[in-house]
Image (cartoon, rainbow, N blue to C red; front, side, top):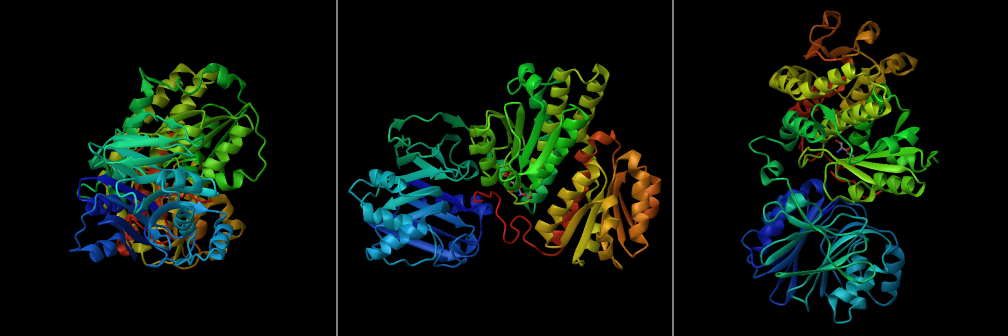
Length: 606
Ligand code: M6R
């Protein structure tokens, strides 16, 4: 939610900032802007809309600048407009600030500053930061920012320029991500490492309360007690190719096609000599005392958690419940030291998930993070962390993060099942082999992707639709429905098939698309009956099932067959056609697939 970048060095500052913003555009695309120090002045350029608007307005303009900051915005306070775009000057233009987060006490601060005569030129919360820096400036910009931080409540990652300090880029963080890229005679800041990959893979992750000052050849970091500290230098394994489209028209399609590899890498990382290995995370003693597992997350990560709950209950035979982070926090959950809480987050930065994590920790639970981003806040806050091996996920719609999260859950369930002695050796081997085969089976579905297009052609002209399934299929239906909503703007809802006739069936009319997921063999007859019920009321049936299920084929308008597997693992496969359906429908409607309206990849506000 908002992306910030900053650069200090002898390179082409304007281009480096622009390139960083392009990489971070997925974090928000209501507006963008940059501030460059040039000839003793801070020049700010900002434009509502996509980054291309900013690039166009900068075309032909040459700046002799060796330091700059940039911002791409997902609007919170104030409508998307040039005026509300970042960077924000202070009143005398001595300061420029970019900010990701929310300053919760901004109204109090604004009032105080207005009483002193400060005039505000935007509706944003951020502008109080630049004005406060002007107001509290004491000749030392680092010290001033540290003092300003003590007045701020809420969340922030900020980049600050001051015109009296033409070689210093100051940054700070509190509950919003910020990473420092370490270069050769140049240094960087960014909300996420993908913006840095072109220049460096060596980074420092700032901790909450940290403030740093960057010069071209020097980085100094101070903790919240104002002590000079040395944060651990981390090396980013991701490569630049992973963060570019590589010939695909959209990141979403590229990431869908990367799933066989991503699941394989996740499997290889965690399976050694035929055994799922999470010994770095859990041992018998931990498991022995656990009597309840909660799985907490938002959006797609929550949907992966639903599959996780299924796997933990069916395979590890442990009482498990999945919940939405923003609800869980306020539901007064019964948590104690016998509870294990698993937090799932691709970005590792989602505010609601992070807040729930802090809550669970304070109640004594064992907390485990499943995340894709090394060094992310959630990975650092949790007691233990399990990384998915999805590589950078750029498209707003999550795909490969989901399947790798699901893979982790299944492997973890097997690991726990063995520790608890609730699985036979034979079953264990069979299940490991099922998971091992998943990348190849996913690839088979992808090889047949053209078969999904007729369903997308049908869907693209509809205004609503339903996704139904039973058991595990319902959990997949929920994710399929979210996927199409977010990228194609078609209103869909997912229902447990059996629940449909308790009200929702009233919405079925001639031509309403009903997507049926039917992989649970013991429930197929019931699914066939449900199909007949809605078909009799005019529904258009698109079914996802194992390829040889003739009964399902016979009652469907479009049947999408997936390779055979044990029912328990079918969610790895049935989601793939649903992701493709969402993608192709979005594409057919001419929507900007990777950046659907109103959304941002990383939701760092509650
Ligand atoms: O980074 P996270 O996994 O914590 O993000 C949670 C959700 O915001 C996210 O899964 C969102 O629902 C997806 N981008 C939707 O495709």
